[in-house]
Amino acid sequence: MLKLSGKPKSSYQVDSGIYQVSTDKNLPEVLKKSRCYFVENEEIPEGYNFYLATDEKKSFIPDGKRFVEIPNDFSYIKNNDIIRFYENDSFGVIFRADSNHNSFLVTEQCNHYCLMCSQPPRKVDDKYLLDEIRQAIPLIPRDTKEIGFTGGEPTLFGDDFLDILRLTKNYLPETSIHILSNGRAFVDHQFVKNYASINHHDMMVGIPLYSDDPKLHDYIVQAQGAFDETILGILNLKKLNQKVEIRIVLHKQSIKRLKELCEYIVRNLLFVDHVALMGLEMMGFTRGNLEELWIDPYEYKDLLSDSVGILENARMNISIYNHQLCLVNQDVYPNYRKSISDWKNEYEDECEKCSKLQECGGFFSSGLKYKKSEYIQPFSS
Image (cartoon, rainbow, N blue to C red; front, side, top):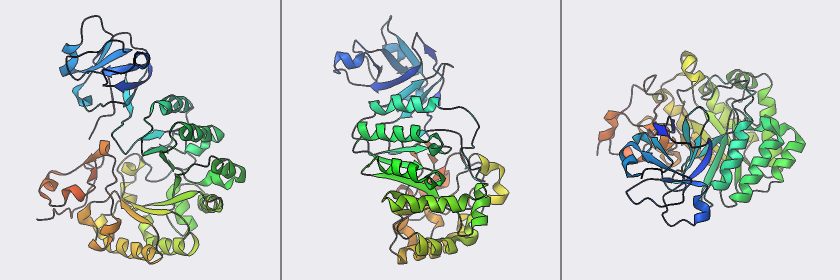
């Protein structure tokens, strides 16, 4: 697991703010002034705003240079990464150029209170996050494959959030955009039209749907009337030819009617672009609701196969995320994906001898000490 935030070990007059990292000794002088240089060896180029060095490389920095010393945990930092220095003397890596798992937290506010929320909502004024994103987007390399926006509920910021999407399109025209949203804001016809008018070539909204039974869905998300607004939001998006993904987090509550939900999707939402069946992440509210949520994936693997079969027979696009390969049946292997972000992904010691380790998605590092299947079984060669 990678550390994404920490405390500098020492610093000299570095202002809080967002900086692009460079390891390029031949960068034009005009660009050096706004960037920091990540020290890799004793060749230290002149002209950078300041210098960034891990414990083991700080001795390479000549006297008199402005620099920040950071722990060796951050030796993974690469060219074109983006870091944020905060006023409370901490820092975070907010974009990694060589990662396919870059997402921006838009807000911690939400109009759901999901039983298994991994980012519990807070009633805070966090519009400063929009300013942070506005500063970061122009620094992101144009060849970046995908950017995600998550929350909380990003659409609570309305047109301000849409401005972020327009900014992303302008600076990163070839980059795919993936938005995590509960979909309820798209009930508003004008908001949907404004969203569609961005006219992005590859922008998708991932919307959770947990049951075909409105009462069960509303119970899981802890919001009365959420089911009806979510379905209407999906319909409004597809009416304007916008890409929609349905996300189903699998736990003790949602698997009660998993097959029925998949049949409902086939009958009523066949036109969505992707269906993701997702394992449980042991973060946030999940830990407090484990008794209500936890079921060993081994116990529902046949149900998962049947549900995938229902969607496959309708020729839908399906993925299975956040599961261990030894806990799903072989018939769903074509739909299995390694999906857990690299910075929060781990494997058990017993997995090291597994012949399919490189194909397996592993575990959320946050969950290993709380709950895991009793049926983890390494594949033999």
